[in-house]
Length: 355
Image 1 (tube, rainbow, N blue to C red):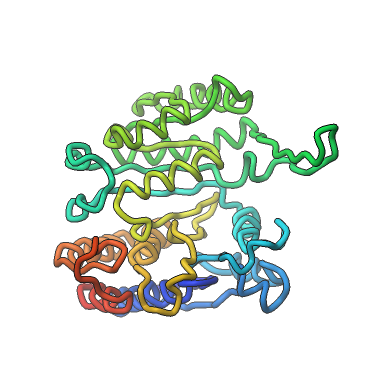
Image 2: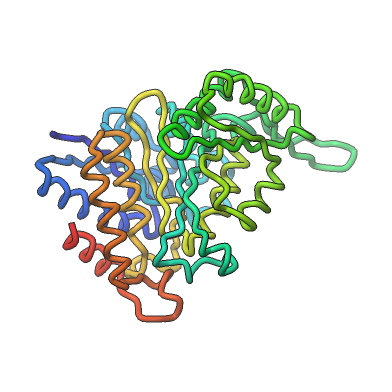
C-alpha cells in the first residue's frame, strides 16, 4: 500500500523529531510492504520568516491532498511579540479548521518502567493509569468572538465561549464510541455551575448518553477534575471536554506520566485524514543539539498508522518497540533523572533496530 503523508517539521526541534518518525515509518514500510511518500509543508515560525505569514498559500491544500499529516512543533520566543493573527500557532488553528479536525485525542499512560519519573505520590503511581482525553478542537473560546474596546476603565479585552448542540454532540459521540473500545466509562468535564455554555454542554451530554446504555457517564466540574487528576488519575478512562479545558487538563495529565516528551496526539474529523503531533512544544533551547526525545512523535506516527491507515499490526509493533527499548533502560535526558542518557538519534536507532 502507498500512503501520502504531509510533513510539517515546523520550528525548534520539530525537524529533528519528524526525521526520527520518518525513519521509524520507513522501517515499518520495509518490514510490512508499505510505501510512505512524504511532502514537506512549511508552517509556523519558519513560514513567517520565509513568507511573512504562518500558513502560506497552498499549505492547507497540500495537507488536504494527503492521506494524513504529521506535525513536529511550531512556535518559539522569536515570534512571541507578533500580533495574534501572525503568531506561529495560528497555522495550527487554521489547519485544524480547514481540515475539519474537531476531535483531539490525547492518551496519557503511566508506563510501568517510568513510574519513578512521575511526580505523583508513590502509592498513587503504583496504581498506574491509562486515560484518554477527547478535546473539542474547533469551537469554544478559541474560536469565539474576541476583541478590544475602550471602557471607563481603559482598554478592555474580551473572548467569548460559544458552543452549539451540534458541536457538543459531535465530540461527545467520539468519546462514547471510543469508550466502547476501552473500559466503557466517560467523564464529561464542564463548569456548569457558572457558565451557560457548560450548562448546554451538560444537558447535551446527558441526552447523548441515552444512546449509549452500555457506557457509564458521569459529570465533573473542571476545577475538581484538575484536582482528581493528581489525587486519583486511575479513576479516569475517557475524558471529554471543551477546547480550553481540554488544552489545560491534557497538559496536566501529560506531566503525570513523567515527561511531556512521551505523549502523542491525534486530531481527527469526519474523514480518516487526520493530523498527528507530539503534545510538547518546539523546545528551541535544545534545538540542533540531538537532545530531543523522539518518542512522542514516533507514537504519534503509530496513532496515524492505526487511526488513519487502519494498519493495526504495524501500530502495535511500533508501540511495542517503544516499550521494549525503555525496558532495556535507554533514556533520553528528559527521562534520565540525572542518570545515563542517550541522544535523540541514538534512541531513534534503537527503535528502528527493535522493529
